Image 1 (cartoon, helix red, strand yellow):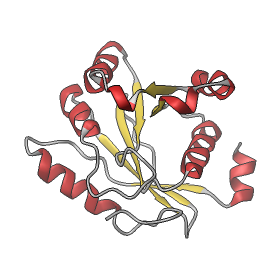
Image 2 (tube, helix red, strand yellow):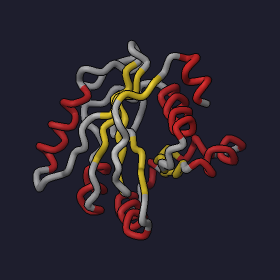
Image 3 (tube, one colour):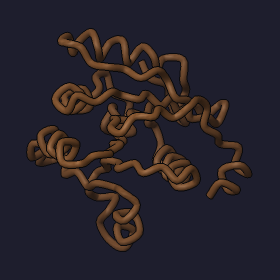
Image 4 (cartoon, helix red, strand yellow):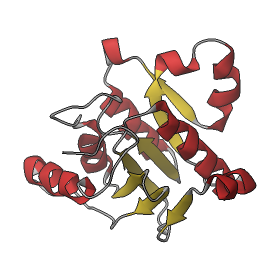
Length: 173
């Protein structure tokens, strides 16, 4: 995988934090290729990250390959306390990194899903922003973010971190 990443020009900038529990948010998420490059980066670096994905990605034969590498299916049409389920996972695991795309879709959105903030707050884990930038073919690690009592301010400051980066089809507003 590392060779394929190197040949494709994709690279990771920054240092992975030395923390046992973490929520990793990646944006802008504007193409299915984000997931492909992200999974290749995860496998190439040997990082154990569980990633929340829409259930349909794991339906059929592809699920046989993707489930064992840590993908967690989410039924978006019937969100059955996903926040509570993820908080419980954090509580029952000594180490856990969880990847989430805060936009919740590849389409342009005005508002991000707040689940990652609620999970981070309730599970008392930091957030690691990962900026996807297609012009430079980089995944850049931002500063660790710790949530406060003001989720609106947290969301605004986190989203602002992503503004300079460009996805395959758009940036983050």
